[in-house]
Structure formats: C-alpha cells, structure tokens
Length: 483
Image 1: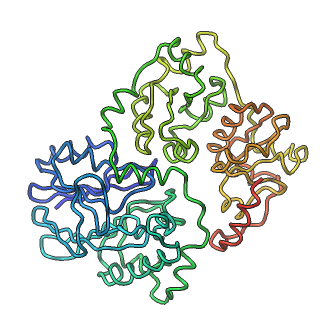
Image 2: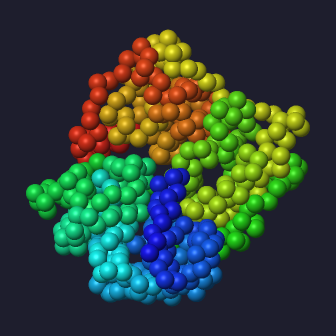
Image 3: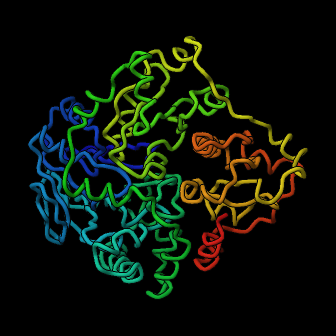
C-alpha cells in the first residue's frame, strides 16, 4: 500500500494518491491531471476510482478530465448531484483498491454531500481518514458556504457538522492518521495548522472542535464566530465542479501563446482585456506597463485572482518571467479562469527595450514610514490586511481597507489625495497599489516589508489582541466600518 500526499502551497490544498496491488485511487485531484497519470504509469497501476470529498469551492478539481483520460469512476458521497456520470455512494459503502478498502463516511456540515473516506488496510485495520473540508488540523470546515444550496442557515449546517464529528470521526481510534484537504492559508477554514498530516489522537487533544466537553450550542458559536465573507469566486467554482469544464489541455493550447509586441499592444488597448503582471513585487514596483494589475506568482496567486476578478470569463494577457508562462495559465485555470489569450514574448524587457512608457510605484522603507508618520492623516494611511489582522494589531491612526473589498470601496477614495499603503509583508499592498493606479490614482506610496517591518520601528502600534478573542459582533462592526 502506498499513500502519497500531493500538496500545492499556492492553494494550501492536499490531493492524495493511493495504490495497492495494481490499482490506484486519487482523492480531490487538481485540475492538471497528467502528474497523477504519470505516477500511476510509473507504479504500473491502473487508476480505478477518483474520490471527491465534496464540491470544492476554492479550486476547480480535475475529476472530469482524469475520468475521461483513464476510465476511472468518479465517486461522491450521498446527496451529491453532478451533471456528469458518477457513483453517488451510500453512507458506509465500500470500494476495493487492490488489497485495501475505502469506506464512505457521510459527514455533512461543511456541505451536505461532504464525506470522509476511511482507508482500511490489508489487515483490516482503520489506517487513515481523508477528511476533505470536514476536519482540518486545528480547525473544521466553515459551515456558511452551502447555505443557499442546502436551504439552511450556517448555524443549522454547523449543527450537522457537530453531529458528523461526534458520530463518524471521534469514535475512531487515536492512531488513525488524518489527511485533510487544506492547510494554513486556505479560506475554507479560520485557524488551520501549518502541518498537513497528524493523528486523530493529537487532534482530539488540541483541536477545539473535537473537545468532548463542548456542547452543541458552544460548538455552533465557536465555528460560526469570526467568519469573513467567502471570496466571490467560490460559488462559481462550485458550479464548475458540479457541471464540468473544458480540458486543461485546451486551456493551455490557447493560453500559452507568445505574443509579438504589436499584437500584445493591440490586446491591451482593448478595454475588455485585462493585463496582469505576475513577476515579483520588487520588479513590478521598479517598472511595469501602465495599467497592468500586479498579482505575483510568488504569493497566493490563484486565490487572489479569484477574489479580485469577478468574472471567470475575463479575457487575460500577461507578463511573466521567462519559463513561467505555462505555470501562470495552469494556476489561472485552477480557479476557473480559462480565457487567457497569451503573454508578451520576451516579457517586460521587450516592452522596455522598445522605448514604451514605463510606470513605477513610490516605495519607502518601514523606517522612512515611521520618520514621516505624522505627515499623513487617518484616511491617508491604508492598511489593506484582513479585518482580523487589523483588529489584532495595527498602526495607530490608520484605516483598514482590506484588499478583498478594495473594488467595492473605490468610490470612497479621492484620486487627488495622497495615500500610503501597507499589508503584512508587501505582497497585497502592491496588488492594491496596482489596482488603484489602473483606476487613475497617482499619489501612492507603498511600504516595503509591510506591517512586519513597521512593527519593529518607532511608529505607534496598537496593543496586541489575540485573534481568537475577536467575536463575530466585533468583526461585523469592523467590516461595516471599512473606509
């Protein structure tokens, strides 16, 4: 028996490859499936099943393409309703893979079809659980994403999650290995651990959601407290995962296209086409094509694309470092953006060498920010971190304008005003600055190293408040006061 976790840091997502005696299964595959096919070929095994723990919201899964290429059957838990052929398993139904067995444990709560897959080894022992978004390390899946589809409140879904954990997960032996679908950084939970594998016994000790003394009412309150609104692309990704999508091969064929300067220029002069710069934030700050939006591959690229670009049909051309062009198209497709038209051949150097206009962003060090702190008013110091980060610790006299909500609050900013922006490390603030510059703002200054650097200077900073103490009421109030 082999179990391999295939973890993708950009999405904080774990897919799984399991094989035994000539057969294999894939759990929660990414959209680009060739690596799974190659892995099975290397091991001389046939992919028999593709298990989906639920309809994912934060990425487009590769189940449809993988099934088409391998003949494997797609398996969902009870109540799932995809439009493509799939096995809708019953609670407790078992599937054989070589000498091992996968048993379906229906664990609704995150979504109604959410299921945990229990792996029973060759000796008949409960070896591991693949929990999807039902149980994370240190947390559980948020219960607010499926409210509309389930015709239930988040509190009712949280109650179902409580029951699922108590009746299906917690009775399992402590030595059972837990393999979740996500780790720290995913928007599918609140406070996940950075580790990606653990024992159930350890989770019973330290995961608040598995505390046996926690009442149903206390569980519901803790699980629903402090939830930020989900990213807008989540619902669109769920729809794609339910109905299917075009092959990643076709997306790559039309997206990984080198564009000569003249053709690229014609594209970016079209207002319906978005120009994205995926290089490092330092390169973008020092020089970029006017009007381009920065979202760097070296950060949480795909989630930020999904959060900031409202239409999955958006046509996109891009700037990338040499050799990273295919990676850009793949990562865009992971969250459903399939209309990439190509990239500037030769990258930004081609543009600069042709003598075209180049824009820059004024950038200062944390020490310079501290030295000049007094020259900015409350509404000029923009902290683009999440409300939970801002409430925990922030620069005094600053205004919280989370990057997630920037587009919705653009009308509250003055194009004739000067602003200084920062986030935690500098990635999000450069994204924010690029969006504002594309909308005609010019008096912008970015703080390198962000709040991490500022907190080590003489700039006045609020007293620290533990994020776990932030109640939903406080968070809702903070969101209402954004700008």
